[in-house]
Length: 508
Ligand SMILES: [Zn+2]
Image (tube, rainbow, N blue to C red):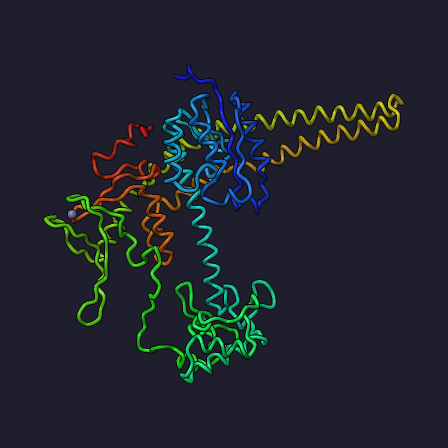
């Protein structure tokens, strides 16, 4: 099969935001990729480096160029080399789509620091790593969020200081900005008289000298924004919490309420976000009978109580019923529990992956050994330079020159070792970390109820395609590889992994 391979490849590198912090450089990625190519006997045709703005935007111009290059029939590109899988695509859907495209061009993805290849284990590994990259991101943001929650609970404001407040130092709590706060007080007092519109109020305050943070004249929108913000009487509202701040209020609560349109209407869901937090499974499941996507709504009943339902409308569909939100979501949780890999498969999977990884890792080890040898040789040479100087063979200038030259060479090699050490990727840790989520998918999903966007992203990671619903139970269309390892309890979908003695049969 390898006969028409010419072993050609391209290198693509991109810096991730985490690395910018850690200081892993593009240059280093590129060098490691080049070294990899050399080791594997791959001739590098092109190098693409995503830098600056284009790394952040979705376009990723260099990435597009790299793909175009692979698609060009004039040359054959066998390998698309990246430093890590997360360089390649930022989410799993993306990842698989791009991989499929590359495959059509006959190009294989290779990662320098992770064992991926087109054999079944490599494929499973790759699927896992792409899931892992995304989990990691989610967790990081959830963690920073939990830090924020703690602060809010202590009565601290964790966002940018609103007009009328300031911070004395970064990360500190709010203090009243005495230059602006009097305007805020006046704003509320004037408005509470009931004679002002937002526009006339803005004009009034402008005449009195009020300015925005950017030194602009206050507008009517700003008036509304300030009037509706409970922070001015000291209430922090956010992250699903309502906490009295430990900073001083600018007005008292009764004045705030005098300025609200109607204290009776308590509609809190005034803004409709793209993600529907009430119905995470909306448009995520389709009906097995008619194929229609299941949607959801919460009609208000006679006594003003909302009844949230999942449902779909289709004439003549026997399954077109209203299913209470709770029931439907409970169904989903059960389904998640059912498909999560059990301990037996987890152990097997880890063992296989670690095995593959370790054999790859040995290569890295032998590289390091080689470099260490080279350092030793150089150190021997340095000793000779000293000897030559002592015995008078080298003049003072020659000695200094030689010494500097050798020291520089040694330093470079040592730096290389150091960088390789930093690059060590603890596969065992990564596996544990990844499985800690996968193992408890149901728990993870339930725990994300206050982060609707992450919750939906999580769902999509586990189920790249829509689920099906037969009126009673949820079924699985297609699962991501880690989950598919386990197979499902539906007989026809177990072809991915079947235990055969000790070895699982992987036919991904
Ligand atoms: Zn239907």
